[in-house]
Amino acid sequence: MMQKIYTTIGLMILFTCSVIAQDNLLKELEKDQKANNKVTGAFKSSRVINGHSMEMLGAGMLDFRILHRFGPVKQGIGDLFGLDQASMRMGFDFGLSNDLTIGFGRTTFKKEYDAFIKYRLIHQEQASTPVSLVAVAGTSIFTYKSPDPLKPLTFNDRTGYYAQLIIGRKFNEAFSLQLSPTLVYRNMIDPADKKTIYALGIGARHKISKRVALVVDYSLVANGLPMSVGTNPLSIGVDIETGGHVFQLHFSNSTGMNERSFITETTNSWSKGEFQFGFNLSRIFSLKK
Amino acid sequence: MKKIVIAILLMLAIQSQAQERLLCRNASVKFFSKMPLENIEAVNNQGLSVIDLKTGNIEFSVLLKGFIFPNAIMQEHFNENYVESSKYPRAYFKGSIQSVPTIDLTKNANYQFNVKGTMQLHGKTAEMATVAQLQVKDGIISGDSNFDLLLEDYAIQIPKLVKDKIAKSIHINVKAIYQIQKPNL
Image (cartoon, rainbow over all chains, first blue to last red; front, side):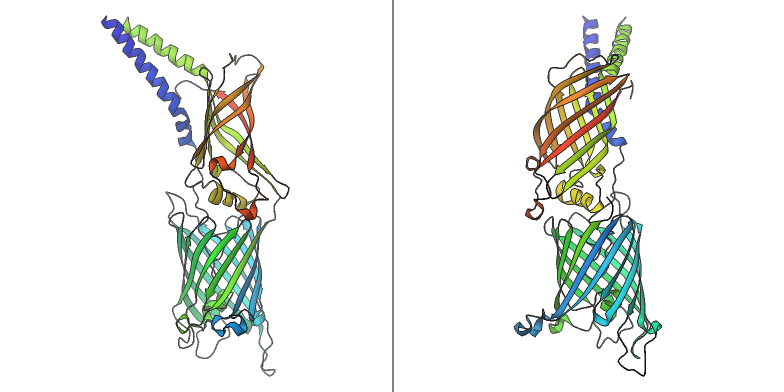
């Protein structure tokens, strides 16, 4: 009798063990499998609005970017709220690898060319790496003729540089925030200005649906501007993503479309109702097969 | 006496288990979206699969982030907008072979059978049925199957703007080379 009970219990244990093993085999295999935990999609585009975002282009991708900045909204209906005036930048960014992007563009304002190189040092990862760290260095050169024929501008006069470190984190599916300490150097300045300017960029995005997000891009200019005239650029907008396109529609007190321009040349003030409409259009092509 | 009985039972259990189960860690799962404007194809070579030949149970588990697309932006959209892989990291199939044939893994042969079960994807579960082949050739056991998934069954929405570029029905091809499970795994 006792023996039978023991045998039954033994069999039951064996049976349960094997059932458990079966249920868990796939789970065990899953544990061994290394997931790619790299965080993607912190921002919809490689720019927050004006400034670089922590996002990179993928390897072999070409981003064709068309930017427009219009006139002041407060000009009213006569100028269709500023839409009669526009400056634009056309640019191409290339993803050389998943962590390295280069790009160049030209802005109609000051007939200025610009180029940059952007490298991701650290990529945010779930459960292990809390932030992404991206370094950007860029240059710009304006090519308009000197207004004074007796004082031609040298190549040196026309150039400016910037360097930037972006520390960014996607906090959850909806919210991402980044800080970007930036240094801008200009060769030609007004006598009251400083050649080297420090700024802190703050960029945030909040998704309101899968394909639409609110974005804010602000730069706190720490020194060097004649602050009676210069203001901190603040842009507020929406990103709308439609397959290969991203539309970034926004209002801003800045019309600049490269770092030198929007950090050091913003003079309009939101508090005086001085802001304008603008948009970035990004179309991504794959250069690989 | 008792001990001997238990020991024998234990050995039998391990042995029988060892021969009954097939597993695969590198199943290839391909999907195709065919539309006049655009064809999209992606592959994942890290599918996990277990087949219990005795009960006929078949399971698959696939990491959605493991799908490789021809370009990075498609891959990002797939993960971010369609399958939402940070919320739902894996797709599962749990099913069983209908009327399990006797499979002799030592002889070269082809088997074909109906598989029925449930697919879990994007937080939704839907019934699924397909035909699967299992081939034994010189000790190599390979399985494959083809089937279609309807995106609406899994609440994966396609925005109107890209509705001409993404098929509503996605074709899936699965290929797996199985190993006989070794004891004490």
